[in-house]
Image 1 (cartoon, helix red, strand yellow):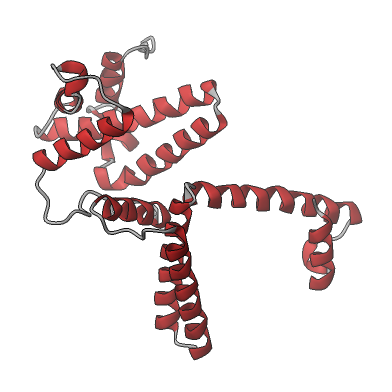
Image 2 (tube, helix red, strand yellow):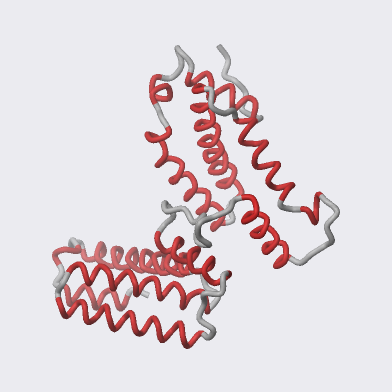
Length: 256
């Protein structure tokens, strides 16, 4: 049988349905939301990498892989009779129209800042919350979650007024972390290190920097420099672990 074309959402749905149907792929048929949830996270990060590289071919592939995850999870629910992909699409379409009255309604033209504030207000009206911090997924990477939590708190007025106040808080938490290290108590060290990282995320916000991006940039710099170190070691014909640590550090300093 010839392969199905995959140039449309309807065809993608048919492909996934066939894979999940009796006589389809044994691996696909046995998957559940839980068994493939890590795939959703992995594909999301691969999309982010494609966007960071500004690589359209990579975007084409990775956005497709992410779309597959959406369709696959929706298909699992269709089989259970609980929702359809159309429901997912309708829900997000209705939400976009509802929260953009300045575009789809009779609202006036507004700035980007006011559009965001309007979105947040309409969201609060639609989804009453117990806390102003609700809506930040617990599954987010910790540094990103800290940034989101702090931003929500700031919108409610809970914010340092000046950069130097945020920096002083970081210094305070850093001092408490050092005191915990001196105490040797693991629980206190864990606690104070977390507080220090949280305070550092606030410092980044005042500098208009994304701490996730700055840390990723530091990761990239370390990896690039480590590759130079590896090449320098390879030239010697020896293994890295064969060098004294002090010598490796000298090579590291030279690897620029």
